Amino acid sequence: MKKIGLLLFCTIILLTQTSIENSPLDTKITYKEYNNKVILFLSLSNYFNEEKYYDAIIKLRRLDSPIDNNLVVFRQSKNPFEFFNLGIKKSPAILIITSSGNKFLEVKGTNVSTNEIVNSVLDAYTLGKIIQ
Image: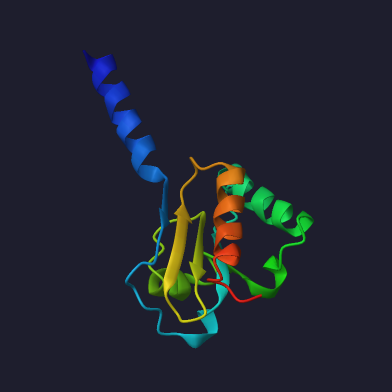
Protein backbone atom coordinates (compact mmCIF):
# COMPACT_ATOMS: atom_id res chain seq x y z
CA MET A 1 0.00 0.00 0.00
CA LYS A 2 2.89 2.35 0.76
CA LYS A 3 4.35 1.72 -2.71
CA ILE A 4 1.06 2.67 -4.40
CA GLY A 5 0.83 5.85 -2.33
CA LEU A 6 4.43 6.76 -3.15
CA LEU A 7 3.87 6.05 -6.85
CA LEU A 8 0.74 8.21 -6.89
CA PHE A 9 2.55 11.02 -5.07
CA CYS A 10 5.48 10.92 -7.52
CA THR A 11 3.13 10.93 -10.51
CA ILE A 12 1.30 13.99 -9.21
CA ILE A 13 4.58 15.83 -8.58
CA LEU A 14 5.84 15.07 -12.11
CA LEU A 15 2.59 16.17 -13.73
CA THR A 16 2.48 19.46 -11.86
CA GLN A 17 6.11 20.45 -12.45
CA THR A 18 5.82 21.06 -16.17
CA SER A 19 3.37 23.15 -18.07
CA ILE A 20 3.06 24.98 -21.33
CA GLU A 21 0.62 27.83 -21.30
CA ASN A 22 -0.03 29.04 -24.80
CA SER A 23 -2.52 31.78 -25.51
CA PRO A 24 -2.68 35.41 -24.65
CA LEU A 25 -2.59 35.57 -20.89
CA ASP A 26 -4.33 38.51 -19.30
CA THR A 27 -1.29 39.57 -17.31
CA LYS A 28 0.18 42.84 -18.56
CA ILE A 29 3.90 43.35 -18.11
CA THR A 30 4.57 46.88 -16.94
CA TYR A 31 8.23 47.14 -17.90
CA LYS A 32 8.72 48.20 -21.51
CA GLU A 33 12.19 46.67 -21.74
CA TYR A 34 10.53 43.23 -21.63
CA ASN A 35 8.21 43.89 -24.58
CA ASN A 36 8.91 41.82 -27.68
CA LYS A 37 11.24 39.48 -25.80
CA VAL A 38 11.87 35.78 -25.36
CA ILE A 39 13.00 35.55 -21.75
CA LEU A 40 14.93 32.50 -20.59
CA PHE A 41 15.04 31.88 -16.83
CA LEU A 42 17.88 29.71 -15.54
CA SER A 43 19.46 28.82 -12.24
CA LEU A 44 22.68 27.33 -13.66
CA SER A 45 22.91 25.16 -10.56
CA ASN A 46 21.81 21.98 -12.29
CA TYR A 47 22.63 21.76 -15.97
CA PHE A 48 20.64 18.55 -16.45
CA ASN A 49 17.38 20.28 -15.49
CA GLU A 50 18.02 23.06 -17.99
CA GLU A 51 19.60 21.04 -20.80
CA LYS A 52 16.47 20.99 -23.00
CA TYR A 53 16.19 24.77 -22.79
CA TYR A 54 19.83 25.24 -23.85
CA ASP A 55 19.32 22.77 -26.69
CA ALA A 56 16.20 24.64 -27.82
CA ILE A 57 18.08 27.94 -28.04
CA ILE A 58 20.88 26.27 -30.00
CA LYS A 59 18.34 24.68 -32.35
CA LEU A 60 16.56 28.01 -32.85
CA ARG A 61 19.87 29.62 -33.77
CA ARG A 62 20.61 26.86 -36.28
CA LEU A 63 17.20 27.38 -37.87
CA ASP A 64 18.14 31.00 -38.55
CA SER A 65 15.34 32.29 -36.37
CA PRO A 66 15.77 35.85 -35.14
CA ILE A 67 16.06 34.59 -31.54
CA ASP A 68 19.27 36.55 -30.86
CA ASN A 69 17.47 39.83 -31.49
CA ASN A 70 14.87 39.09 -28.82
CA LEU A 71 16.52 36.78 -26.29
CA VAL A 72 17.08 37.88 -22.71
CA VAL A 73 18.55 35.50 -20.13
CA PHE A 74 17.96 35.89 -16.39
CA ARG A 75 19.84 33.86 -13.81
CA GLN A 76 18.10 33.22 -10.53
CA SER A 77 21.14 34.14 -8.44
CA LYS A 78 21.78 37.43 -10.28
CA ASN A 79 18.24 38.50 -11.25
CA PRO A 80 15.87 37.54 -8.41
CA PHE A 81 13.82 40.71 -8.94
CA GLU A 82 13.00 39.73 -12.52
CA PHE A 83 12.00 36.22 -11.43
CA PHE A 84 9.64 37.67 -8.83
CA ASN A 85 8.34 40.52 -10.99
CA LEU A 86 7.56 38.26 -13.94
CA GLY A 87 5.96 35.56 -11.79
CA ILE A 88 8.56 32.84 -12.28
CA LYS A 89 8.89 30.80 -9.12
CA LYS A 90 11.35 28.20 -10.35
CA SER A 91 13.65 27.71 -13.28
CA PRO A 92 13.99 26.58 -15.99
CA ALA A 93 11.34 28.56 -17.83
CA ILE A 94 10.77 30.59 -20.98
CA LEU A 95 8.39 33.51 -21.12
CA ILE A 96 7.43 35.28 -24.34
CA ILE A 97 6.23 38.86 -24.07
CA THR A 98 4.52 40.35 -27.14
CA SER A 99 5.35 43.72 -28.63
CA SER A 100 2.23 45.08 -26.92
CA GLY A 101 3.43 43.87 -23.51
CA ASN A 102 1.23 40.82 -22.99
CA LYS A 103 2.40 37.39 -21.92
CA PHE A 104 1.94 35.17 -24.94
CA LEU A 105 3.59 31.96 -23.86
CA GLU A 106 5.07 30.46 -20.74
CA VAL A 107 6.99 27.18 -20.79
CA LYS A 108 8.23 25.96 -17.45
CA GLY A 109 9.47 22.84 -15.78
CA THR A 110 11.67 19.94 -16.74
CA ASN A 111 9.20 17.56 -18.38
CA VAL A 112 9.06 19.39 -21.68
CA SER A 113 10.87 18.37 -24.84
CA THR A 114 13.34 20.48 -26.78
CA ASN A 115 11.03 20.34 -29.82
CA GLU A 116 8.06 21.59 -27.79
CA ILE A 117 10.11 24.60 -26.69
CA VAL A 118 11.38 25.27 -30.22
CA ASN A 119 7.93 24.94 -31.80
CA SER A 120 6.35 27.19 -29.19
CA VAL A 121 8.89 29.96 -29.81
CA LEU A 122 8.62 29.57 -33.59
CA ASP A 123 4.82 29.82 -33.29
CA ALA A 124 5.23 33.18 -31.55
CA TYR A 125 7.25 34.45 -34.52
CA THR A 126 4.89 32.91 -37.08
CA LEU A 127 1.82 34.43 -35.44
CA GLY A 128 3.48 37.84 -35.35
CA LYS A 129 3.49 38.01 -31.57
CA ILE A 130 7.19 38.88 -31.64
CA ILE A 131 8.35 41.44 -34.17
CA GLN A 132 11.59 40.36 -35.82
